[in-house]
Image (tube, rainbow, N blue to C red; front, side, top):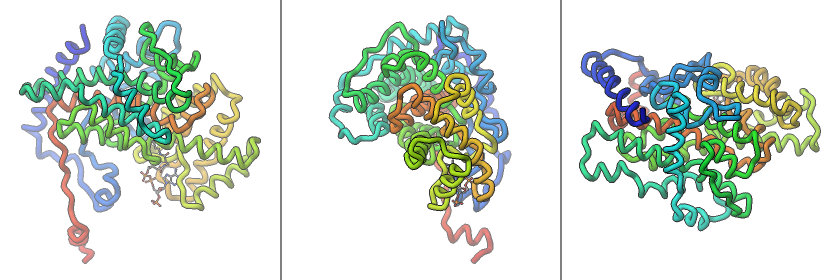
Length: 433
Ligand code: CMX
């Protein structure tokens, strides 16, 4: 069965659940909002719905009910590789079902058919300032593709709103298929003198990305693991929420994806993976390359905190334990690069940072998040240009957020419009006037 047919079946079965909740139970309360939540970035306010992933504070992410190890275990593997097809993970996110090998091969074929990036995108990227950050280039490249939106065309032709998800899925497949080449092109344009490597039509999403980056095996598996781990983290994080918000105005997935990349580019969110490496490089320089003792490392951590900065790669708005995405990458490092000097730094930070953050007493979660570990793997396989790391996060994240947007359209989620209040109103509620 094609992905489109499988989704049509799932959506038909799901719609009555949402309709019933709205019609018969629309007044039931999900929670209440405090002043701290209204001022404090809406932490914990339950006002978004997604069935694609769920983030439990103490357990971490589950994709369609599966933990990360279960996801990696069950999805069909690329022949000769340790890691599954990224295409198969996308199928799981969209449909909630683990695909068969045949399903994945068909979807990989769909991706291949749609993967050619138009020349004008390359021309535009080449015309940008050489100082442009790779995330800016990535966002601009996605936006440049917007003129090909199938959704916009069908919307203008007057398509039935119940069918909006169909051209949205078309746009999604067209965009997803181009992400490996967009990413690799930006990398080689910026850091490899624009010596581009042509895609290999025989390869899968992750394999082709590694090939176009010009990095040998097992980097193909690193890429697959990376894209899967970063794909989705429920709906409230900045990148996912931005994507959902933009799409709620019926802006197409190109607008939504370009916007979510802009949110991911912030140092408190996806850019933290670049910041971790930048921070470690600073420590290494001061140490003249030698591994610091635990005492020396503790001092570096305190110096950073005392100068009013955050320790990148630690803390989380929802998680209250070590991020399982961190652990999966740590296990990869222990298996493939246990003696790498940067891994030794990261490993030492794993020991020294949490007790210091606990002692400082500010961060609600002193444990490492996904970004603390990801750069070390990239560096080990030769991708030392750490400004590029967040693009890798972005490629993965677009798979998850856009899957959510397809479902937003299918279930008819309306335009987002929360209500603001004034400070005086809050003072009145609090009796603080
Ligand atoms: N280092 C130092 N201080 C930290 C900290 C860290 N890693 N994490 C949190 N804090 C501080 C906050 O800055 C805040 O201080 P103020 O009260 O002075 O403003 C206080 O602890 C309370 O913050 P919190 O409620 O624990 O955390 P938030 O939900 O507000 O923020 C996050 C979450 C991720 C932005 C924060 O932990 C942080 O800045 N971490 C470092 C950057 C990072 O790794 N980001 C990547 C997160 C994962 C991702 O999205 O990619």
